[in-house]
Length: 375
Image (tube, rainbow, N blue to C red):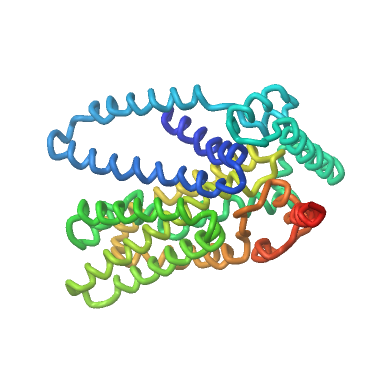
């Protein structure tokens, strides 16, 4: 329970913190590293647990002890992190915001700390004025109007994972492979995790060039498609070739998971307004966890041969429940690459269709273009 509380706090705050601190130009790359380190940890944890199970299946203390070094490293990092300038300005702690910006942009020639604080203050004041005009100043504004729509968009990608096979292929992956009888579950899991790690590194490098929308939508579609194909494998004659095809589908599914996982947590930090970001982040993580709990109850029954024994046909379940989320992701997810918080606010307030965000010119772009002409 304590570990779950700590993990929940990190999931709520880290993408939000990165979105507020990282420069717009490299924000996507930095946000994608959240998923990269998650994948690295999962990979090595799985290897370690498999090795320990061969030595002593009852040795539970060694993996617990191994975490202390990592917790110590985390402690050092968190103590050294500066406060979020956006949060500090929103709380009217301008001196704190100035100190944080000086640390973050130390050595950057021509960076004007006072000007940046004013920009953040103008954004915070604008959002507060809009909220007051629309009578949406309380926390539950995350469920109403434009802010409610932003909450749905922010959580859509990460929640769609739950309905396209996350618990089946990932959480209970090794157990699913074992029950399905498709070979050594440890080897299959290592193959899929290894390729997933490579994919996570690739996503970090293309997030700001290819864009988050394409990565997210393509990844979710790949997860849904492979779930459907795995279900089809469950009803065709069982020959040896089926096992190889299944492993291929599992690899493709994990690549899709990496793409949606990286962008999904990134959207939670990027999509919400500065004023409601902490509420939106908490709501998205909570909704995701509740659905995850339900899926963790269902999946063991699906694959266990003494229960429903669906075997590979469990893929049909996720193909059915996941279809609305895959269709929705192409209609709801906007492109956030290269957009500042102020630009995203403007695009949502103007009710621009999400798939048109990339092509729409904002007031900020027009102002920059005007200044360049005058210069």
